[in-house]
Structure formats: structure tokens, C-alpha cells
Amino acid sequence: MQEEMRISLKANATLDEIRERLLNLGFYVQEEFQLNDIYMIDKKEEISLENFENIFSNYILIRECVGKKNSLVLRKREKNEKGETLRHTSTKCPIVSCNDAYCLMKQLGYTKLLTLNVHNIVFSNDKNEICVQNVEGLGVYIEMNQHNIKITKNNGDTIEEMITNLTSYDLPLDTTNSRATKSFDMLKKVIEERK
View 1: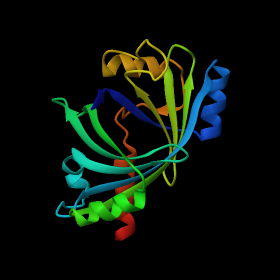
View 2: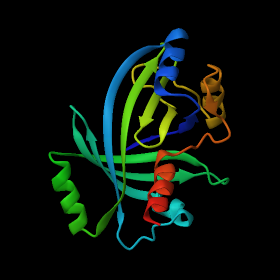
View 3: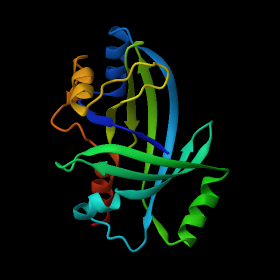
């Protein structure tokens, strides 16, 4: 099981603009990959924005990491007293076929909530790692995890330290919500499209 703090902010710029800005700040591309996630929830769960916290406190992802490995991921979230997500825990199980996993989850009583297709670029300056995510249908998000992938120094010991770290680069970000979630934004879109 993996556990760590994470912040996510919506960008007020395109992927190309963010890329250029980071490269000009001395960052380099550490890794680039495509994730295609199918969010599965118990079919008895009410699908509504009002039930978002309940839906996303415990759900399953069928994750295709294009050109790499596929996995089934059980996700849980831990909140603080303000209702902000402090920690994500993930338990992963490798799978051979996303389609077979989808069929199995349906047989086990789960239903597809939404799909997120995300082009990820991890930038590093050997001090911080920043993940820029271009989400199909939603735009660009910037994530920073507490622990870096290849750098031993972490990005902060508190949410506030991580926000200060990320905003110090003066990127065009919506700083009004350090908990911007792709899943919530996509759920709003899915619900709106169903009307």
C-alpha cells in the first residue's frame, strides 16, 4: 500500500504554455506517459455531486498505463477536519487485460462512473518534481506529490509547504483550490451530459 500527501491545482494555461514556462525555469522532462483510467464504484452507490465524498472515499480504478503495465487500483482517501484530502492510499494489483478486469468488476457488482484519459509529463529541476496533466475534455492540472520519484528530497512535510513550493515557480494556476480534482470535474461533466 502506498500513502502520501498530494496537491493538485487547475492550470490557467495550455499544456504547451506550461511546458515552455517550466523549461525556461530550468526544469527538464523526466518522464512522459499516458494513463487511461476507468473509475468503478458499487452499482448501489448514488451518482451525484452531493455524494462525491462518499463515492471517492473508496473506489476502484482500472488503469491502463499505455506501453507499460495495467493494474487494478483500490483507492481510499483520508480527510482532515476541514474535509480536505490529506492522504491517498492505493493498493495495486497487476492485470493483463483492462477489458477482462472491467467485465470482472461488473460481475462483482461495480459500475463505470467515468473515464479519465490523461497525458502526463513529469518535470524535474533536481529539487522538485511536478506532474503536468493534460486531461481530455477538462484541460491542464498540476500535481505535486509529497515524495519525489527520483529525487530523495521531498516536496514538503505539510500541504502548506507543498503549496508554497509549487507556487514559488509563479505558474499560471488557480490557487483558490489546492484540492482541484480531475475526478470531481469529470463527474460534474458526466452528470451534466446525462441531463
